[in-house]
Image (cartoon, rainbow, N blue to C red):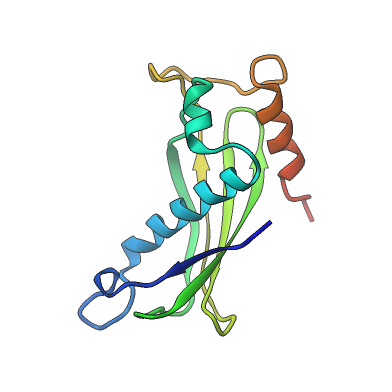
Length: 140
């Protein structure tokens, strides 16, 4: 699996020249969508299947070091947990010198286009359900 890369732009920084903290959430989303595309489920595929997956929480976000204009961030994405209802995605962002900038998680539920809660299961969404189960990092 290829690691997602984001090149920090000038407009993503604050007056001090440091990447504004709100942009890291956007970077997480970019990396997450790229991750799903790489495993064969482009977000548009989700929608065609009748599934939307909004962010319902951000957890354990730790800003470890700043990034600035011109930095290339490598964003590693892994699945921390999945139970059919909730998916937790883990992110590690590193600068080009391998220094960790951010580490954290996002939680997602599954909804129909009408906003009704969906449970991903082997019966309703077999390929997606199986792939998510396979990709969850083993508990240590």
